Each structure stands twice: as C-alpha cells, then as structure tokens.
Amino acid sequence: MAVVPRYDGQFGRTQAEKLLWRAGFGGGADDADRLAAKGLNSAIRSLTRPAKTGLKGPRPKDDGDPLAPNDSYGHDVLYWLDRMVRTQAPLIERMALIWHDWFATGDVGSQKLSLKQVKRSRQGDHRLLQRRR
Image (cartoon, rainbow, N blue to C red; front, top):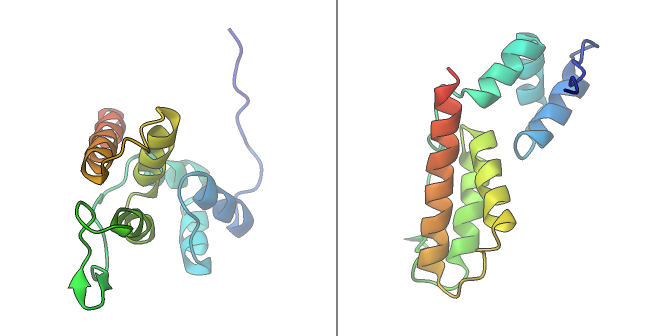
C-alpha cells in the first residue's frame, strides 16, 4: 500500500492562504493569519471539523426583496454565491459544489430539484466530517 507523504515544512501565512483556497473559497489576510497561528494540524482540524456550519452576516437582497432561489431566474446562482461568501464551513460548501458538478446533476431543468440535491449533498458532507470528531 502506498504511503501518502506527510507535509512537515513551514506553515505560515502563505501556506494558510493556499489551504484556504484548496479547502474553500479563499479568505482575507486576517483569515490566513488566524489559520497560520493555529499550526498545520489545528488548521486542518478547524477546516475538517468546523465548530459552526451556519452562515454569517446579513442575507442578500435583490431590489430590497430576499432571494427566491426556487422561483426567480438567476437567484439560484446568487444563492450559491451567497453561501460561498458567508459560510462558516467552507470545506462543506466547496464539497457540495464539487459533488454537484461531479454527479452531473447541475442541469436538471429545475432550480428547485437542483437546490434540493445540493442541500442533500451538503448535509452528507457535514455528517461525514462529524463522524471524524
């Protein structure tokens, strides 16, 4: 059985920024500094076993109205972008996006069905990460 090499090099801001992009959608300089301060093992643990999985910040609006991803054209895309920006669990959101593309279910002709599939994938990703605690 092949052994996966273990990284034992430096883990600073540059490596933390790369990890934030690989396990999510990037982050600001403060995010990278906070992650780097944890050290490699704790940084990985914080991404694979997030303490919080909700969204932070205010919900977006379109002309003053809340998004309606099941009903309004284009709101499903805005819904995804919002989740990517406001998530507290970027790896779960990233994996939901990957599975959505991987299983080729992105173009089912129904925003409602597409979003339902993504929600189910997101819940599965969260359960997988929870098992490893």
